[in-house]
Image 1 (tube, rainbow, N blue to C red):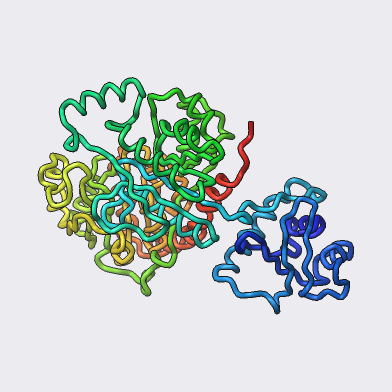
Image 2 (cartoon, helix red, strand yellow; image 1 turned 45 degrees about the vertical axis):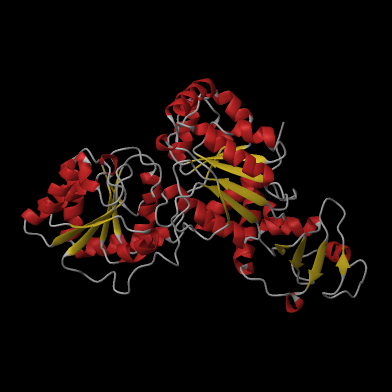
Length: 496
Protein backbone atom coordinates (compact mmCIF):
# COMPACT_ATOMS: atom_id res chain seq x y z
CA UNK A 1 0.00 0.00 0.00
CA UNK A 2 1.29 3.53 -0.71
CA UNK A 3 1.34 5.75 2.38
CA UNK A 4 -1.74 7.74 1.42
CA UNK A 5 -3.77 4.61 0.74
CA UNK A 6 -2.70 3.10 4.04
CA UNK A 7 -3.90 6.18 5.91
CA UNK A 8 -7.28 5.92 4.21
CA UNK A 9 -7.46 2.29 5.25
CA UNK A 10 -7.09 3.48 8.83
CA UNK A 11 -9.86 6.01 8.32
CA UNK A 12 -12.11 3.33 6.88
CA UNK A 13 -12.79 5.23 3.66
CA UNK A 14 -11.55 2.70 1.11
CA UNK A 15 -9.66 -0.23 2.60
CA UNK A 16 -7.01 -1.66 0.35
CA UNK A 17 -8.19 -5.23 0.34
CA UNK A 18 -5.00 -7.14 0.86
CA UNK A 19 -4.72 -10.80 1.79
CA UNK A 20 -1.82 -13.24 1.83
CA UNK A 21 -1.05 -15.43 -1.16
CA UNK A 22 2.21 -17.36 -1.09
CA UNK A 23 5.08 -14.99 -0.44
CA UNK A 24 3.37 -11.91 -1.90
CA UNK A 25 0.34 -9.84 -1.13
CA UNK A 26 -2.20 -9.46 -3.88
CA UNK A 27 -3.98 -6.12 -3.45
CA UNK A 28 -7.31 -5.26 -5.01
CA UNK A 29 -7.47 -1.52 -5.73
CA UNK A 30 -10.12 0.41 -7.62
CA UNK A 31 -8.34 3.05 -9.62
CA UNK A 32 -9.62 6.52 -8.89
CA UNK A 33 -11.59 5.69 -5.72
CA UNK A 34 -10.27 6.54 -2.28
CA UNK A 35 -6.68 7.16 -3.45
CA UNK A 36 -5.08 10.54 -3.97
CA UNK A 37 -3.74 11.35 -7.43
CA UNK A 38 -0.19 11.18 -6.05
CA UNK A 39 -0.82 7.67 -4.80
CA UNK A 40 -2.32 6.58 -8.10
CA UNK A 41 0.75 7.85 -9.92
CA UNK A 42 2.94 5.90 -7.50
CA UNK A 43 0.90 2.74 -7.93
CA UNK A 44 0.95 2.96 -11.73
CA UNK A 45 4.22 4.75 -12.40
CA UNK A 46 5.36 2.13 -14.89
CA UNK A 47 2.17 2.30 -16.97
CA UNK A 48 0.42 5.68 -16.61
CA UNK A 49 -2.69 4.40 -18.37
CA UNK A 50 -2.32 1.40 -16.15
CA UNK A 51 -5.63 -0.13 -15.33
CA UNK A 52 -5.23 -3.33 -13.43
CA UNK A 53 -2.35 -4.82 -15.38
CA UNK A 54 0.44 -2.68 -14.01
CA UNK A 55 2.98 -4.26 -11.71
CA UNK A 56 5.11 -2.30 -9.29
CA UNK A 57 7.26 -2.71 -6.25
CA UNK A 58 6.79 -0.26 -3.40
CA UNK A 59 10.24 0.17 -1.91
CA UNK A 60 9.54 2.31 1.15
CA UNK A 61 9.26 -0.59 3.56
CA UNK A 62 6.51 -2.46 1.70
CA UNK A 63 6.75 -5.89 0.15
CA UNK A 64 6.27 -6.59 -3.52
CA UNK A 65 2.64 -6.38 -4.58
CA UNK A 66 0.71 -7.20 -7.71
CA UNK A 67 -2.13 -4.74 -8.34
CA UNK A 68 -5.27 -5.89 -10.10
CA UNK A 69 -8.70 -4.46 -10.45
CA UNK A 70 -11.51 -6.46 -8.81
CA UNK A 71 -12.68 -7.53 -12.26
CA UNK A 72 -9.36 -9.24 -12.90
CA UNK A 73 -8.81 -10.60 -9.39
CA UNK A 74 -8.83 -14.31 -8.69
CA UNK A 75 -11.33 -15.77 -6.30
CA UNK A 76 -9.82 -16.78 -2.97
CA UNK A 77 -11.79 -18.89 -0.45
CA UNK A 78 -12.39 -16.94 2.72
CA UNK A 79 -11.19 -13.68 1.21
CA UNK A 80 -14.28 -11.66 2.16
CA UNK A 81 -13.89 -12.76 5.76
CA UNK A 82 -10.25 -11.67 5.83
CA UNK A 83 -11.09 -8.36 4.19
CA UNK A 84 -13.58 -7.53 6.91
CA UNK A 85 -11.01 -8.44 9.56
CA UNK A 86 -8.29 -6.31 8.00
CA UNK A 87 -10.60 -3.33 7.55
CA UNK A 88 -11.64 -3.50 11.20
CA UNK A 89 -8.04 -3.81 12.36
CA UNK A 90 -6.98 -0.88 10.23
CA UNK A 91 -9.76 1.24 11.71
CA UNK A 92 -8.59 0.30 15.20
CA UNK A 93 -5.17 1.72 14.30
CA UNK A 94 -6.77 5.08 13.52
CA UNK A 95 -6.35 6.24 17.13
CA UNK A 96 -2.66 6.77 16.28
CA UNK A 97 -3.67 9.92 14.42
CA UNK A 98 -4.90 10.84 10.98
CA UNK A 99 -1.38 11.61 9.70
CA UNK A 100 0.29 8.42 10.92
CA UNK A 101 0.59 5.37 8.71
CA UNK A 102 -0.47 2.11 10.43
CA UNK A 103 1.89 -0.86 10.28
CA UNK A 104 0.63 -3.49 7.78
CA UNK A 105 -1.25 -6.18 9.66
CA UNK A 106 0.84 -9.20 10.63
CA UNK A 107 -1.52 -11.53 8.77
CA UNK A 108 0.21 -10.34 5.58
CA UNK A 109 3.09 -12.66 6.56
CA UNK A 110 2.38 -16.35 6.52
CA UNK A 111 3.71 -18.10 9.60
CA UNK A 112 4.35 -21.55 11.00
CA UNK A 113 2.71 -21.77 14.44
CA UNK A 114 3.30 -24.78 16.69
CA UNK A 115 0.83 -25.65 19.45
CA UNK A 116 2.16 -27.80 22.30
CA UNK A 117 -0.68 -29.56 24.09
CA UNK A 118 -0.61 -30.12 27.85
CA UNK A 119 0.75 -33.45 29.17
CA UNK A 120 -2.71 -34.43 30.50
CA UNK A 121 -4.69 -33.38 27.41
CA UNK A 122 -5.50 -35.26 24.21
CA UNK A 123 -6.23 -33.49 20.93
CA UNK A 124 -9.40 -35.49 20.46
CA UNK A 125 -13.14 -34.86 20.04
CA UNK A 126 -13.70 -37.99 22.12
CA UNK A 127 -11.40 -37.58 25.11
CA UNK A 128 -10.03 -34.06 24.73
CA UNK A 129 -10.89 -31.29 27.16
CA UNK A 130 -11.66 -27.61 26.77
CA UNK A 131 -8.08 -26.61 25.94
CA UNK A 132 -7.93 -29.07 23.05
CA UNK A 133 -11.23 -27.69 21.77
CA UNK A 134 -9.88 -24.14 21.91
CA UNK A 135 -6.73 -25.32 20.14
CA UNK A 136 -8.76 -26.98 17.40
CA UNK A 137 -10.93 -23.94 16.66
CA UNK A 138 -7.95 -21.58 16.74
CA UNK A 139 -5.99 -23.85 14.41
CA UNK A 140 -8.94 -23.89 12.02
CA UNK A 141 -8.98 -20.10 11.80
CA UNK A 142 -5.20 -19.84 11.41
CA UNK A 143 -5.25 -22.42 8.63
CA UNK A 144 -8.03 -20.49 6.90
CA UNK A 145 -5.76 -17.43 6.99
CA UNK A 146 -3.03 -19.37 5.18
CA UNK A 147 -0.73 -20.18 8.10
CA UNK A 148 0.88 -23.55 8.79
CA UNK A 149 -0.16 -25.12 12.11
CA UNK A 150 1.58 -28.01 13.83
CA UNK A 151 -0.03 -29.64 16.88
CA UNK A 152 2.30 -31.53 19.22
CA UNK A 153 0.12 -33.65 21.46
CA UNK A 154 0.04 -36.78 23.62
CA UNK A 155 -1.97 -39.61 22.07
CA UNK A 156 -4.23 -42.23 23.64
CA UNK A 157 -5.54 -44.08 20.59
CA UNK A 158 -8.74 -42.02 20.26
CA UNK A 159 -9.64 -40.17 17.09
CA UNK A 160 -7.92 -36.79 16.84
CA UNK A 161 -9.15 -33.46 15.53
CA UNK A 162 -8.23 -32.91 11.90
CA UNK A 163 -7.04 -29.30 12.15
CA UNK A 164 -3.29 -28.91 11.80
CA UNK A 165 -0.45 -31.36 11.31
CA UNK A 166 -0.75 -33.78 14.24
CA UNK A 167 2.61 -34.82 15.71
CA UNK A 168 2.60 -37.31 18.63
CA UNK A 169 4.76 -36.63 21.67
CA UNK A 170 5.60 -38.88 24.58
CA UNK A 171 4.37 -38.60 28.17
CA UNK A 172 4.79 -40.95 31.10
CA UNK A 173 2.51 -41.89 33.98
CA UNK A 174 3.30 -43.67 37.21
CA UNK A 175 2.34 -47.05 35.75
CA UNK A 176 4.81 -46.61 32.89
CA UNK A 177 7.84 -46.34 35.17
CA UNK A 178 9.71 -48.66 37.49
CA UNK A 179 10.27 -47.86 41.15
CA UNK A 180 13.81 -46.65 40.43
CA UNK A 181 12.67 -44.48 37.51
CA UNK A 182 10.01 -42.87 39.69
CA UNK A 183 12.56 -42.09 42.42
CA UNK A 184 14.95 -40.54 39.88
CA UNK A 185 12.08 -38.57 38.35
CA UNK A 186 11.10 -37.26 41.78
CA UNK A 187 14.64 -36.00 42.32
CA UNK A 188 14.63 -34.31 38.92
CA UNK A 189 11.28 -32.71 39.73
CA UNK A 190 12.70 -31.15 42.89
CA UNK A 191 15.81 -29.90 41.12
CA UNK A 192 13.94 -28.63 38.07
CA UNK A 193 10.95 -27.36 40.06
CA UNK A 194 8.53 -29.06 37.67
CA UNK A 195 4.81 -28.33 37.96
CA UNK A 196 3.85 -31.82 36.69
CA UNK A 197 5.01 -35.29 37.78
CA UNK A 198 7.35 -37.04 35.33
CA UNK A 199 7.54 -33.79 33.40
CA UNK A 200 11.03 -34.44 32.00
CA UNK A 201 9.75 -37.12 29.61
CA UNK A 202 7.18 -34.72 28.16
CA UNK A 203 9.69 -31.86 28.01
CA UNK A 204 12.36 -33.92 26.28
CA UNK A 205 9.87 -35.30 23.76
CA UNK A 206 8.31 -32.05 22.62
CA UNK A 207 11.56 -30.04 22.57
CA UNK A 208 13.23 -32.66 20.35
CA UNK A 209 10.16 -32.64 18.12
CA UNK A 210 10.21 -28.85 17.86
CA UNK A 211 13.85 -28.94 16.75
CA UNK A 212 12.95 -31.30 13.89
CA UNK A 213 10.11 -29.18 12.48
CA UNK A 214 10.74 -27.75 9.04
CA UNK A 215 10.50 -24.90 8.59
CA UNK A 216 11.27 -23.90 12.16
CA UNK A 217 8.15 -22.46 13.80
CA UNK A 218 7.76 -18.70 13.90
CA UNK A 219 5.89 -19.09 17.18
CA UNK A 220 5.46 -21.81 19.79
CA UNK A 221 2.26 -21.70 21.86
CA UNK A 222 2.35 -23.36 25.29
CA UNK A 223 -0.83 -23.99 27.27
CA UNK A 224 -0.91 -23.53 31.05
CA UNK A 225 2.85 -24.00 31.13
CA UNK A 226 5.14 -21.62 33.00
CA UNK A 227 8.01 -24.12 33.08
CA UNK A 228 8.86 -24.65 29.41
CA UNK A 229 9.46 -21.14 27.96
CA UNK A 230 13.16 -21.06 28.90
CA UNK A 231 13.74 -24.49 27.34
CA UNK A 232 11.93 -23.54 24.12
CA UNK A 233 13.85 -20.27 23.89
CA UNK A 234 17.10 -22.17 24.37
CA UNK A 235 16.52 -24.39 21.32
CA UNK A 236 14.59 -21.89 19.17
CA UNK A 237 15.94 -18.44 20.04
CA UNK A 238 14.39 -16.81 16.95
CA UNK A 239 10.88 -18.18 17.58
CA UNK A 240 8.24 -16.32 19.52
CA UNK A 241 7.20 -18.06 22.72
CA UNK A 242 3.56 -17.56 23.71
CA UNK A 243 2.10 -18.79 27.00
CA UNK A 244 -1.69 -19.15 26.76
CA UNK A 245 -3.25 -19.42 30.22
CA UNK A 246 -6.72 -20.89 30.65
CA UNK A 247 -6.71 -21.13 34.43
CA UNK A 248 -5.32 -19.53 37.56
CA UNK A 249 -1.90 -21.08 37.09
CA UNK A 250 0.62 -21.35 39.90
CA UNK A 251 4.20 -22.47 39.40
CA UNK A 252 7.31 -23.47 41.30
CA UNK A 253 9.46 -21.72 38.71
CA UNK A 254 11.20 -18.38 39.00
CA UNK A 255 8.52 -16.28 37.34
CA UNK A 256 11.03 -13.57 36.41
CA UNK A 257 12.99 -16.11 34.35
CA UNK A 258 9.78 -17.35 32.75
CA UNK A 259 8.77 -13.80 31.87
CA UNK A 260 12.19 -13.07 30.30
CA UNK A 261 11.79 -16.05 27.98
CA UNK A 262 8.14 -15.42 27.10
CA UNK A 263 7.36 -13.03 24.26
CA UNK A 264 3.63 -12.84 24.94
CA UNK A 265 1.22 -13.93 27.63
CA UNK A 266 -2.35 -14.60 26.49
CA UNK A 267 -5.28 -15.36 28.80
CA UNK A 268 -8.76 -16.67 28.08
CA UNK A 269 -10.44 -13.93 30.13
CA UNK A 270 -9.73 -10.62 31.77
CA UNK A 271 -10.30 -12.33 35.12
CA UNK A 272 -7.37 -14.73 34.48
CA UNK A 273 -5.31 -11.81 33.20
CA UNK A 274 -5.81 -9.77 36.38
CA UNK A 275 -5.33 -12.78 38.66
CA UNK A 276 -2.08 -13.82 36.95
CA UNK A 277 -0.66 -10.30 36.96
CA UNK A 278 -1.42 -9.86 40.65
CA UNK A 279 -0.36 -13.32 41.80
CA UNK A 280 2.92 -13.39 39.86
CA UNK A 281 3.73 -9.68 40.07
CA UNK A 282 3.68 -9.09 36.31
CA UNK A 283 2.53 -5.87 34.62
CA UNK A 284 -0.89 -6.00 33.01
CA UNK A 285 0.47 -4.75 29.70
CA UNK A 286 2.37 -8.05 29.27
CA UNK A 287 -0.98 -9.78 28.67
CA UNK A 288 -3.48 -10.01 25.84
CA UNK A 289 -6.97 -11.47 26.28
CA UNK A 290 -8.31 -13.98 23.76
CA UNK A 291 -11.85 -14.82 24.78
CA UNK A 292 -13.11 -18.25 23.80
CA UNK A 293 -15.41 -18.06 20.82
CA UNK A 294 -18.35 -20.07 19.55
CA UNK A 295 -18.79 -22.01 16.31
CA UNK A 296 -22.00 -20.52 14.89
CA UNK A 297 -22.18 -23.19 12.20
CA UNK A 298 -22.45 -25.94 14.83
CA UNK A 299 -24.17 -24.12 17.69
CA UNK A 300 -27.39 -22.52 16.52
CA UNK A 301 -30.99 -22.53 17.80
CA UNK A 302 -33.59 -25.07 16.80
CA UNK A 303 -36.31 -23.77 14.52
CA UNK A 304 -38.96 -23.14 17.23
CA UNK A 305 -36.65 -22.24 20.11
CA UNK A 306 -38.72 -19.20 21.14
CA UNK A 307 -41.98 -21.16 21.37
CA UNK A 308 -43.14 -22.04 24.92
CA UNK A 309 -42.29 -25.60 25.90
CA UNK A 310 -43.63 -27.81 28.67
CA UNK A 311 -41.80 -28.99 30.52
CA UNK A 312 -39.02 -26.41 30.44
CA UNK A 313 -35.91 -28.45 29.70
CA UNK A 314 -32.85 -27.71 31.84
CA UNK A 315 -29.36 -28.96 30.96
CA UNK A 316 -26.10 -29.38 32.82
CA UNK A 317 -23.19 -30.35 30.58
CA UNK A 318 -19.65 -30.53 31.87
CA UNK A 319 -17.27 -32.42 34.08
CA UNK A 320 -18.85 -34.19 37.05
CA UNK A 321 -17.03 -32.30 39.76
CA UNK A 322 -18.20 -30.41 42.89
CA UNK A 323 -16.59 -27.22 41.53
CA UNK A 324 -18.86 -27.35 38.46
CA UNK A 325 -22.04 -27.45 40.58
CA UNK A 326 -24.12 -30.23 38.98
CA UNK A 327 -25.58 -30.99 42.43
CA UNK A 328 -26.88 -27.41 42.67
CA UNK A 329 -28.74 -27.83 39.40
CA UNK A 330 -30.23 -31.17 40.50
CA UNK A 331 -31.35 -29.71 43.85
CA UNK A 332 -32.91 -26.66 42.18
CA UNK A 333 -34.86 -28.76 39.68
CA UNK A 334 -36.00 -31.15 42.43
CA UNK A 335 -37.27 -28.16 44.43
CA UNK A 336 -39.31 -26.84 41.51
CA UNK A 337 -40.71 -30.26 40.70
CA UNK A 338 -41.81 -30.58 44.32
CA UNK A 339 -43.74 -27.32 43.78
CA UNK A 340 -45.51 -28.93 40.83
CA UNK A 341 -43.78 -26.86 38.16
CA UNK A 342 -43.19 -28.37 34.69
CA UNK A 343 -39.42 -28.72 34.48
CA UNK A 344 -37.06 -31.54 33.48
CA UNK A 345 -33.30 -32.05 33.82
CA UNK A 346 -30.62 -33.64 31.68
CA UNK A 347 -27.10 -34.16 33.01
CA UNK A 348 -24.25 -34.88 30.57
CA UNK A 349 -20.68 -35.34 31.66
CA UNK A 350 -18.09 -37.77 32.91
CA UNK A 351 -15.30 -38.00 35.44
CA UNK A 352 -11.65 -37.30 34.88
CA UNK A 353 -10.07 -39.54 37.46
CA UNK A 354 -12.09 -42.76 37.34
CA UNK A 355 -12.91 -42.93 33.67
CA UNK A 356 -16.19 -43.21 31.84
CA UNK A 357 -18.45 -46.07 32.91
CA UNK A 358 -16.96 -46.28 36.40
CA UNK A 359 -18.63 -43.22 37.90
CA UNK A 360 -20.05 -45.06 40.93
CA UNK A 361 -16.48 -45.42 42.22
CA UNK A 362 -16.49 -41.69 42.91
CA UNK A 363 -18.05 -40.58 46.26
CA UNK A 364 -19.31 -37.29 44.82
CA UNK A 365 -21.02 -39.03 41.92
CA UNK A 366 -22.81 -41.43 44.26
CA UNK A 367 -24.20 -38.43 46.15
CA UNK A 368 -25.09 -36.70 42.89
CA UNK A 369 -26.87 -39.81 41.63
CA UNK A 370 -29.26 -39.66 44.60
CA UNK A 371 -30.01 -36.01 43.84
CA UNK A 372 -30.49 -36.67 40.13
CA UNK A 373 -32.98 -39.42 40.97
CA UNK A 374 -34.90 -36.97 43.17
CA UNK A 375 -35.01 -34.49 40.27
CA UNK A 376 -36.08 -37.16 37.76
CA UNK A 377 -32.96 -36.38 35.76
CA UNK A 378 -31.82 -38.16 32.63
CA UNK A 379 -28.09 -38.90 33.06
CA UNK A 380 -26.29 -39.37 29.74
CA UNK A 381 -22.75 -39.88 30.97
CA UNK A 382 -19.87 -38.63 28.87
CA UNK A 383 -21.01 -37.14 25.55
CA UNK A 384 -18.48 -36.85 22.71
CA UNK A 385 -17.83 -33.39 21.37
CA UNK A 386 -19.56 -33.86 17.98
CA UNK A 387 -22.87 -34.66 19.73
CA UNK A 388 -22.84 -31.62 22.03
CA UNK A 389 -24.45 -29.04 19.66
CA UNK A 390 -27.58 -31.12 19.03
CA UNK A 391 -27.85 -31.96 22.73
CA UNK A 392 -27.80 -28.30 23.79
CA UNK A 393 -30.20 -27.29 21.03
CA UNK A 394 -32.95 -29.51 22.45
CA UNK A 395 -33.02 -27.64 25.79
CA UNK A 396 -34.27 -24.31 27.05
CA UNK A 397 -31.99 -23.46 29.98
CA UNK A 398 -28.29 -24.24 30.50
CA UNK A 399 -26.93 -23.99 34.05
CA UNK A 400 -23.25 -23.14 34.66
CA UNK A 401 -23.24 -22.91 38.45
CA UNK A 402 -19.51 -23.18 39.11
CA UNK A 403 -18.45 -22.88 42.74
CA UNK A 404 -14.87 -22.14 41.66
CA UNK A 405 -13.61 -19.11 39.78
CA UNK A 406 -14.35 -20.66 36.40
CA UNK A 407 -12.13 -18.82 33.89
CA UNK A 408 -14.35 -18.76 30.75
CA UNK A 409 -16.19 -22.04 30.17
CA UNK A 410 -17.01 -22.91 26.58
CA UNK A 411 -20.53 -24.11 27.39
CA UNK A 412 -21.64 -20.59 28.32
CA UNK A 413 -21.47 -19.14 24.81
CA UNK A 414 -22.33 -22.46 23.20
CA UNK A 415 -25.55 -22.59 25.22
CA UNK A 416 -26.42 -19.02 24.29
CA UNK A 417 -25.70 -19.53 20.60
CA UNK A 418 -27.93 -22.62 20.68
CA UNK A 419 -30.91 -20.56 21.82
CA UNK A 420 -30.82 -21.35 25.54
CA UNK A 421 -31.15 -19.05 28.50
CA UNK A 422 -28.05 -19.36 30.70
CA UNK A 423 -27.97 -19.23 34.50
CA UNK A 424 -24.36 -18.81 35.59
CA UNK A 425 -22.30 -18.09 38.68
CA UNK A 426 -21.12 -14.55 39.29
CA UNK A 427 -17.54 -15.78 39.64
CA UNK A 428 -14.33 -15.88 37.61
CA UNK A 429 -14.74 -15.15 33.93
CA UNK A 430 -18.43 -16.07 33.81
CA UNK A 431 -19.66 -12.44 34.05
CA UNK A 432 -17.47 -11.67 31.02
CA UNK A 433 -18.85 -14.64 29.10
CA UNK A 434 -22.47 -13.81 29.93
CA UNK A 435 -22.19 -10.04 29.68
CA UNK A 436 -25.78 -8.80 30.17
CA UNK A 437 -27.32 -11.71 28.28
CA UNK A 438 -27.21 -14.29 31.07
CA UNK A 439 -28.66 -14.58 34.57
CA UNK A 440 -25.92 -14.32 37.20
CA UNK A 441 -26.36 -15.80 40.69
CA UNK A 442 -24.23 -16.55 43.73
CA UNK A 443 -23.83 -20.35 43.79
CA UNK A 444 -23.61 -20.26 47.59
CA UNK A 445 -27.07 -18.63 47.76
CA UNK A 446 -29.30 -21.60 46.97
CA UNK A 447 -32.61 -19.65 47.27
CA UNK A 448 -31.26 -17.23 44.63
CA UNK A 449 -30.42 -20.17 42.34
CA UNK A 450 -33.91 -21.62 42.74
CA UNK A 451 -35.48 -18.18 42.28
CA UNK A 452 -33.63 -17.55 39.01
CA UNK A 453 -34.70 -20.91 37.59
CA UNK A 454 -38.26 -20.51 38.88
CA UNK A 455 -38.59 -17.15 37.13
CA UNK A 456 -37.64 -18.67 33.76
CA UNK A 457 -39.92 -21.68 34.23
CA UNK A 458 -43.00 -19.70 35.27
CA UNK A 459 -42.65 -16.69 32.95
CA UNK A 460 -42.58 -17.70 29.26
CA UNK A 461 -42.09 -14.10 28.15
CA UNK A 462 -39.03 -13.69 30.38
CA UNK A 463 -37.62 -16.95 29.05
CA UNK A 464 -38.21 -15.81 25.46
CA UNK A 465 -36.49 -12.43 26.01
CA UNK A 466 -33.55 -14.07 27.77
CA UNK A 467 -33.10 -16.50 24.90
CA UNK A 468 -33.17 -13.66 22.37
CA UNK A 469 -30.52 -11.70 24.26
CA UNK A 470 -28.39 -14.81 24.56
CA UNK A 471 -28.42 -15.53 20.83
CA UNK A 472 -27.64 -11.91 19.99
CA UNK A 473 -24.67 -11.76 22.39
CA UNK A 474 -23.15 -15.10 21.37
CA UNK A 475 -23.34 -14.14 17.70
CA UNK A 476 -20.69 -11.46 18.28
CA UNK A 477 -18.08 -13.87 19.67
CA UNK A 478 -16.58 -15.78 16.70
CA UNK A 479 -13.43 -17.89 16.94
CA UNK A 480 -11.82 -15.62 14.36
CA UNK A 481 -11.50 -12.92 17.04
CA UNK A 482 -9.70 -15.34 19.34
CA UNK A 483 -7.38 -16.48 16.56
CA UNK A 484 -6.59 -12.87 15.64
CA UNK A 485 -5.11 -12.32 19.11
CA UNK A 486 -2.85 -15.36 18.72
CA UNK A 487 -1.94 -14.30 15.18
CA UNK A 488 -0.95 -10.86 16.39
CA UNK A 489 1.06 -12.24 19.34
CA UNK A 490 2.88 -14.63 17.01
CA UNK A 491 3.87 -12.00 14.47
CA UNK A 492 5.29 -9.21 16.57
CA UNK A 493 9.03 -8.88 16.68
CA UNK A 494 10.72 -9.63 19.97
CA UNK A 495 11.73 -6.46 21.77
CA UNK A 496 14.87 -6.22 23.87
